[in-house]
Amino acid sequence: MIPAGVDAPHCLVGQSPQIRKIRHLIDKFGRSATPVLLLGETGSGKEVVARAIHDAHPTGHFVPIDCGSLVGPLVESELFGHVKGAFTNAHENKRGLIELANGGTAFFDEIGDLPMEMQVKLLRVLQEREYRPVGSLSRHKVQIRVIAATHRDLPREIERGNFRQDLYYRLNVVTLRIPPLRERREDIPLLIDHFLDRLGARFVLTEEARRTMVNYEWPGNVRELWNCVQRMTAMAPGNVVQVADLPTGLQNHLNARHAGRVSMAAAMGGGGVPVSIPSNGARTPVFRLSEIERRTIIDALRHTRGDRTHAAQLLGIGRTTLYRKMKEYSIEQEHRMPLESQLG
Ligand SMILES: Nc1ncnc2c1ncn2[C@@H]1O[C@H](COP(=O)(O)OP(=O)(O)OP(=O)(O)O)[C@@H](O)[C@H]1O
Ligand SMILES: [Mg+2]
Figure 1 (cartoon, protein in one colour):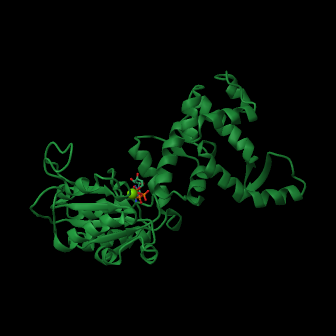
Figure 2 (cartoon, protein in one colour):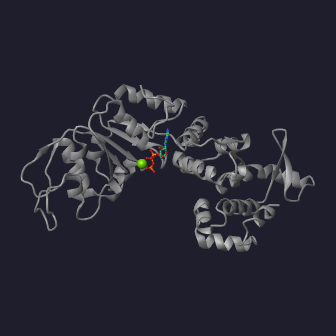
């Protein structure tokens, strides 16, 4: 069985029907050597699933191979290794990634980015189960489990002439689609708690902060959520995380969701900013986006005690942009204390 909630770096967290199904399939075919093709948007957890498949029957090593970086003259040697003297600077024998994965799992990440000439070579390894290191006369036997992942639509890449159909058939024996996070929102609270655990952080999220996170679209999927948890725990002044401690993208999202109701309130005579609108029976202040941005910048500067480079990093913007925005919002630079009063 794959553990559901145990904290491990590569643990597959989630109790949504989709994640349960993936876990069930991993249990079912994890022990066989069947090739698996993982499809999913960026940050959705393809590598986590690949590792879970390997861990279901952990023989040998799990070797991630970043296909997008397999370009240039040394690619072949990187994959297949070389023998001493094969080319200038080949001062000794070198083992390639395929050999490292022998007896274990080779994880071809972003297989859609594999250059055409390497696709032919990989196909040959899969068909013949042997390869030849660069400069060697002999062929080496190899037994690897192949897992490949991509965010691309491979059939379309085949039509466009960018991907070999024969390689696609070899890889596409079992296909798992990892759904984007927005299609399994019930996993979000579990993931938040998992990430807080991973950071060893004792933080409490206000109900509104949690709700905002659950309702957000997460275009960068679980990776974006992980970044968000790291950032908000760094930004929160105490150990309570409020909406104001969330990255601006999430706050804007919340604001946009409220916008319809705000304009109603304005039409009925509200108008001013901030305004109060009903939200689940509570009165929630809503601010202009610029006000939220100003507060976020002040929070970041306060958190970093005025270190603008660090603040820009936390905010995910460049230093120049931070300076420009500080000027735009008339945020003083010598602020350590005054920042409190600038928050109003
Ligand atoms: N179900 C999950 N449980 C726990 N952590 C997860 C889960 N899914 C993703 N993560 C975490 O989210 C981050 C992104 O996951 P991963 O690298 O597997 O995504 P990916 O689909 O391979 O992304 P990319 O397409 O950008 O390579 C990692 O830090 C990973 O640990
Ligand atoms: Mg990945």
